[in-house]
Length: 418
Ligand SMILES: [Zn+2]
Ligand SMILES: [Zn+2]
Image 1 (cartoon, rainbow, N blue to C red):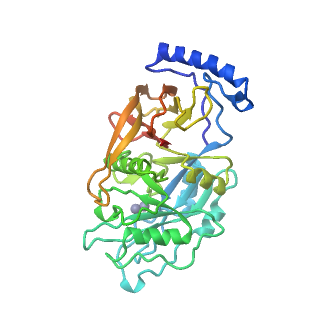
Image 2 (image 1 turned 180 degrees about the horizontal axis):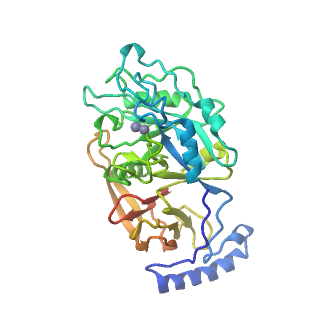
């Protein structure tokens, strides 16, 4: 779990004027606050308290030996549990490849006689046993992994995050073979029919046949950061296509996933071999239960980061009441900078338009955005920035973008004003 450190509020860029505006807002707000019970908790200096709950830290994309054919044999569920507890994760979802043939640790050979035989969710009961009340929730999900190597048309990998553990349909196998036969949209439909919360994993990637083919938009989330060398150029495209969704009026949630295949990889990992929890996805939830975490996830209350970097976004009206409508006048950015970084920047933008190339999977999405804050921060620093805004339409989101390396970045959820 993550609780905010006690910050000294900082007012970059806006020192004098912003203070004056705040003082005026405070005067007006206190006058107004006395008139209605609703506003009694608001204060334009301290800002309204956070709602009840906490940020729970997790990993939505982890592979285990025994059900994924590319783990090298080390990643037992028990080893994953130990590693997760040691690094302080609150939850993780095993997302082994759907059981195409050859899904074992030692071979990638595929025997057509074994196509689409399953079983799926092989660690369902093991995960329940390895969960530690009050410390770690382990859930068995899936990554439906059709392959399209022969005709070089992409298909996509679909993350299945079990939503309601009591009603998820775990019967039978996913259909993911033969090669070239299953589209990404078909894999997505299978996941939706089971009751999965669905994630388009690594929508852009260096390996062409795992890029999503955009044959369906009926997903819940996009993996805006897939663990590799850090927050890399393919992740930037994934984050941009998520913002394109939001600009188009879709309710798409942003998640990250390490895609860890080798549990003993040391943080932050190297090359295409990411460490567990790199990146971590935090979900704001009222309680430490899977139902509560899913509720926060479906509401889009997420943040994605590596190491001890953090970045969270909140909106308030001029009275300091929490508000993410056209009345939003203050955007607050709280966070911290991992000490591995020297200096880096916190950037807040308002996206206003998208040139969306889909279903072309190779063309790069282009997002038009205004920069509302660009502030240098330093390794080990905690910060609490407030930025005045006019509540204009757009998608507000922020990132902590290292200057010289892609690791230890941090990304916020989005505030959408339409
Ligand atoms: Zn994948
Ligand atoms: Zn994966």
